[in-house]
Length: 227
Image (tube, rainbow, N blue to C red; front, side):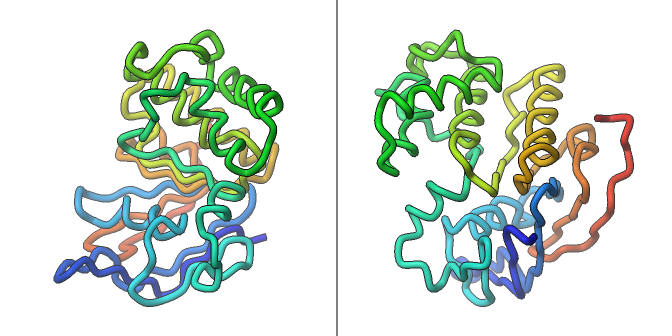
């Protein structure tokens, strides 16, 4: 089943053409890596795919719902889309667990249940021991783990990750990719991953290469030894 579909999507920022007629589908259980030089449109692609940014033209659907017809995009994102931002976007006044709990509480989940789910998500990324610390008390790698846990909590079917291993060492980065891979294989989650590291792209089912807002190349990955 297709989880997210982009059809002939363009995105213009003034005179800058960030995306130029991009079409892409990511199916349930599929991990697609997005690579390309700086300014090629990678982050814009993720923002449009997750409904954080609207396309100038073309269409985006998530689980068959056209985002142009969705009245409450924020609610759809909280329920269906997890996002690991490049700058993490953790709330400094909330503990790690509270940051992870927040999207669930906004959806009406009771505090006790939200905390239980948050602790499970933190344990999944090896960060359960920092649950009650604030972001300023954490290292860059620990903050990255909290951001990933926040994206994984709940029953989201689409995960969008913008350089999620950027602040992590190689061994920890491998653990995070193994976790994302298992979410695809075991839970049928669709993952769209921006990375500049071929090592991490090797965990994907497909790698697409963006250049000047266009998909210049798309390859199936067969490097099973990386997994």
